[in-house]
Length: 387
Image 1 (tube, rainbow, N blue to C red):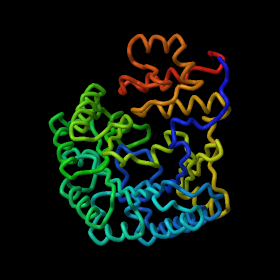
Image 2 (image 1 turned 60 degrees about the vertical axis):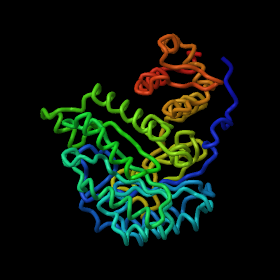
Image 3 (image 1 turned 90 degrees about the vertical axis):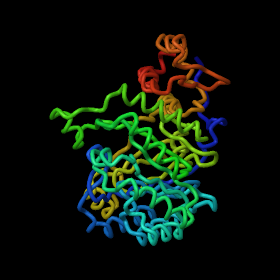
């Protein structure tokens, strides 16, 4: 098979978008299922952290103007509005935001009081992603969440009234003890709030988390069959109310797909600031120190990177990653070099014969999204010499 020229794929305009991610690690408590680079009880470090992030932003070469900015965590809504404003001002000054840039903020429902919501909208956040997770009090307790179902609705109301134009609700399904009926009620409750975007994630047991230790000690683990049923229920329900699934876990009303995520999935370039943050610039992926103190002392000594990732080393690896990322999207991904190698491989032919994958107008699509991981494993097992 002839190797292709390296190029941006014309069918994926998101690959041309430029973005920036800012990580805010502070939390009131670490949720039992969370394995992100977060800390609890460290709010006293917030000003030092802000200074480090602002320094990193100022010293980083610009790839702007930026089409999307995403502040995630952690709990960015605990960082203080003045600090959030300083971060956005620094990004505007040093990296230039487009007039219509998507500017997203992750928030916990209990933080979204009216004055806070008004301030967040005033400083330029056009999109807020609320960590709702469930509308079932018992499920919220099991997940270690601090808000009530009513606070979710209040948060959406306050943010809408403040002028935030795009609202996402994050939901988690498959918590042990959650019934199918409970999950149905959570979906119904979410839709009554008229969100523009809904993300639905199956609860996973990540090594090193409180949940991982509990399961090792005999606590029930999430059941894959139960989670499959709940994912299928979410797809059916959300599509019936007019939302489109554009990725395995993400649903949106027209025009409200997350621009930052689309860019990342299409191998667009994005900067990243803060501890544990990962970036993709000029075909190179790198990441910052994960530990809070390591990051802070590092940036204070002008030592930012925790390392360079090797996932995208060479033309073959780059194309494998492009297909790997694109397989999760409902629109699929242009097959290209790696996709064609997958299709003609022995395992790939079996997947085609089983109706699991197909190629349509040059794009590789997964017909059964719940089995995307199986397709991805096969893709990652191939090498350039296989084709």
